[in-house]
Length: 288
Image (spheres, helix red, strand yellow):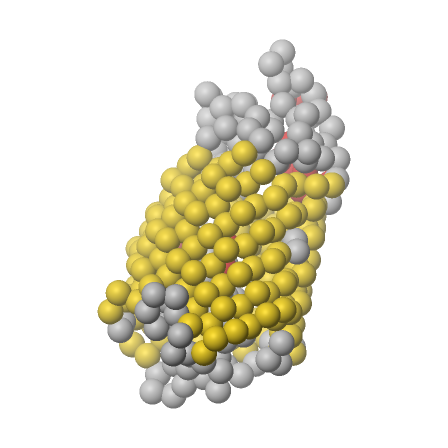
């Protein structure tokens, strides 16, 4: 796959994964009507750990076109690459959960020196969203508390092939304030622990015999607790067609199943990002 194709894929993923933008547009259509489709340009930059427990962050950015379609059942690019909503009520929604992480090189000065690089990782699987609490109205702002139960298959890709890397269980408790400072702006805070199967822990933390050194002993990773993430984000309309977002998260790997792996060198990681979404065209028809 060409570099352009890879970047186009990343742009689609940016608009698909709430963990990157840290905003969530689900379960609020009674208050904010959105166009059936919209298209434009997104520019974003992120600083994220190379993998959970890595010593270093890496920095990524892009400026690319985007497209969002909000059908009654099929939706593209609005918290989803492509998804079919199975159940959607005022208090419950059943659909797909997605997440992603950028690739990382095993540089000579890293603890992974001499080991294979980590490819781009993406996750997909079913989720149930429950609206636990809601108060306010459009005039004074809407406050929501949601609980999500998410189970996803994990895959890595170098954009020429895809490899299955196991499964994660990822419950999440989220507080969101829509209209906190101006109409339709969004503040979000979430708490999210993660458990994973051995196959994913192997990908991040296992050291096979051929890669063992005096400073990096052989290590057999095991399944279990991966870590806890606290995240926050804010999205605001700068103009009627331009939205700006900021996001930050802090991850705790304390008491993780593989905290004694020589590759898990930091118990705490941080990530942050910012960007602009410019809507150039939109439908005159609005989502129901």
